[in-house]
Length: 190
Image 1 (cartoon, rainbow, N blue to C red):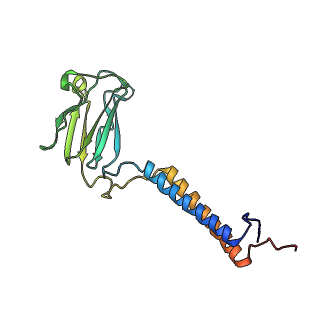
Image 2: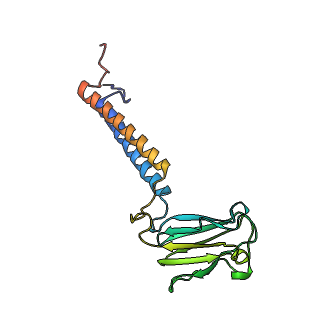
Image 3: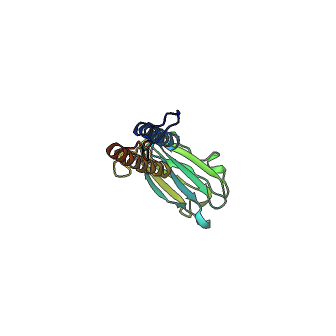
């Protein structure tokens, strides 16, 4: 053991350092999950519908089944389209894009709506309704196989968790080695 006040390679010093490192790693993992964990509101996430994909007179997909709380984002891939609600549950308040039948939008436009009320919704594009540009959305708590939608864990948090676990196992292995075989090498060679 060193008598000059400096820290030597002792079991106590090693364990103190290892404990601190493990605590910091665990805090880092929890922080990464909190920062990137997403919405805790219990919603169904986000779905995208492409409006006029590749210039086609259609919505892609033209049929969705989602959970309540899911936000649908429509993204325009061609010009002169809109989203107008034609049928929905009685207690829903969805009307589609602003301007109703009279307003159309062009490539790059985005519109979103969060569906809370369960039931069937139908919609169309006013200029292309006769060409069959219609679609539907079913909102059901049973969407996605009936499993509740939990918070998604981002892959970066998973990687950090695996790395932290590996570091902790390595640290515990070293701690075991030092505890079993000793670690005070200050007196060696005297």
